[in-house]
Structures are given as structure tokens and as C-alpha cells.
Length: 454
Image 1 (cartoon, one colour):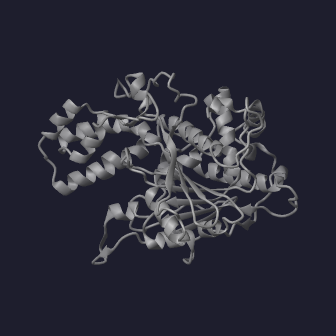
Image 2: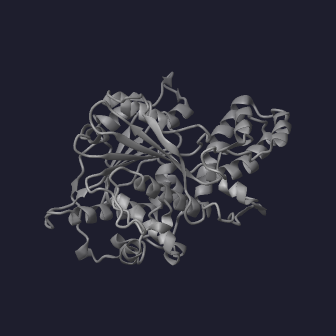
Image 3: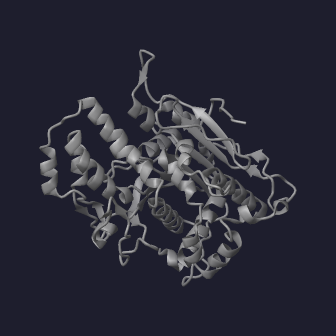
């Protein structure tokens, strides 16, 4: 459903909640309850409680997504089904077709942004821009008993493929040498048969150019070439992109995808057919599972800039996103890069940084609990929880700092074998969180003592 259909009540809420960046930032201290007691549930406890509560999981991928036909949530879905033991299908099933962001900036009638890279337009035609729209894939994990588990996989990777394929992969093929699989990914064209004007895969590198690139000599040492392509060209380039103007598009896309997922959820109600207001059912829990850069992006969506405030449709999407965060008490970070990426965000303002966004979430959650029917205003709020899972041998993960309105638990796992006590495969260390038994155990049945930073 289009973002623009949100009712004017949401816009009114925007004026009160987001006069600055959120009500949590602007409310006087006397009006913001001080959270004290933490939420002590785990994802396993949430899933085991499905006889009385709905659980809706948002999964957002990290750097280096392989893109077309590569669904990063599949391994997590399989692990969840292995835990609950009664899924009808071992990884659940897809519901409907790909659901594209189609609100402000992303509609099929929208012209491409005028962003440039080294003087060249990133997207040259409307078709290229429409091929870059982020999308959500809906899954349900039906069970033989107990309520269905819903998981929405948020895919922002199409936004970065034009830059990665045309500017990084093609250029580096002429320097270090081609990597066949990446060039094939970047040169495959596959329209989405369910949505005219959208693409499952797009030929950012033309087939003729791809043939020429594949004939380039492989100048770099094989292992060096492979590491550079996989880690730097294909992976860390995403993080660099997210630190610039592209972040606004990523954030807007994520808000729209979450809103579309919630509006399509069973039990979501709307105040009127003509002008619906997002109102998730009161006892529905939202759980966020994010990998790598996804952790940074999902909470960066709390940042509201001047353009958002001046554009009603963007403001409505911002407020609707905050309504979802109000009902989110549990977040899992796989291999987060918060400390590293915030090095690029040295600002004079104490309220426009990643830590402040996390603190705002804690205050939003507290406001939600205080507004619940029968809530005792004198009872301290329960702190929402971030469980940051990190393999110490992962080259791209850091500890999440201590927060005052959120319970942060840094938990250490081991995603691969340590060869001769000297080396763990760096790719497995970074990518294996959804399948490693230790990591899944700490999500579903935690036993390790968290490393709490004070």
C-alpha cells in the first residue's frame, strides 16, 4: 500500500512527536519515564509464547549481499524452524511476490536522482532507477501447532549495485583481474514477471562489456584478488556508500518496506479505507534481526532531517516507522559496525548520532508501555534489549556501547574453526552467524554471560 495513504492523524502525530527529531528528544525530563527494569525475554521465549502472542521478525541484511536470488534470511529461517521443531516447511514459505518500495522517490513515476560519482550520473535512465528500488520479501513459517511466525526480509542492496558493478567491479577487473561470478551477477538481466518495470536482476554491466572484462589478465595474486573483490570491492564499499548522501535513500527505503510489511500483516487495522492509519495489534511483538551494516541502517532510520520535516509523505513514513519501534522490545545485531562507522559522524550536535537514535528507541518503547491500558505510571519501564553477537575473530564487528535507555548485551560467539589457534576463516567469521550453533543458541536459548559495558 502506498505510503501516501497514511491518514492526516499520522501527520498530526508527526508534529508532536517529531518537532525536532522525536518526542523522546524534545519532551521535558519530567515527562519522560526513566526505564529501569530490563526486558528479560529472548527470541526463543518469544517464539515459545506464540500460543498467545504474535511475533513478527524483521531481518535486514548487511554488506556484501550477493543480490539476485540470494535470500540472506534463509539460514535464519531454517535455524528458527529447527528450534521450534514443528514448521510445516524447513525454511517456511514465501508469501506473495516481491514488494517494492513505491512511495516518495521510489514510485515508477519518479525520475532518477541526480547523484553523481566522479562526474558521472549513478542512474542514467528511469529504468535504471526503477531497477534499484529496495524490496521486502514476506515469509511465513507455518507450524503444525502454535501460531504462525512471520518474517520479512528487507533488501536494500539494489540501491548500491549501480555503483558497485559499473564503477568498482568493472574498474578493478582491469586492475587486479576479473572475478567471474561477480561480473556474471552484474551483467544478468531478469525482469520481475510479477511487477512490470521492476527487475529481479539488472545488467549494470552490459553483456558485451562483461565478455571483454572476462578476457582481462589476472594480474593480482589469486588470494589477494579474491579477498579484495569479496571484502573491499563487494562488501566494504557498501559501508562507505552508506556514509554519504545515499544514506537518505537507504533510510527512506527501509521505512517504506517496514510500513508495507506491517500493513500486510494479519491483524493490522486501519481507521478508514480511504485514509488508513497504521495500527498494529496491541499484543504484537516486533523483533529486529540485523546483520553487519543492516544494524547501522535500521536505527539510522530514526534520524529525521529537514527534508523529511518539509515533505508530508516522508514525515508520515517516519512516524509510522516509530510506531513499529514502539512495539519492538528485542533486537539482535550480528557483527555490527557501529563504532567504526560513527567515526565518519563527528558532529557538534549531541542528538544526531547513532547512540542518540538507540536512546530514542528506548524512550519510544517506554512511552508505549506507559500508554498501555492499565499501566501503572509509577512502575519503571522495562528496558528494551539489544543482544550484539560478535565473533572476536570477525574483522568487521565491534562492541555496542553502554546505553541508559536500552539494555545492551555484548555476547561473544565462535563462527568457525581456529586453525592451529592462529586463523579463523574471515568470511565464515563474518557470515556464519545465522548457522553457527553457538550463535543460534545465544539467540534462542541464551547461556553465555554477556559482556556488559559500564
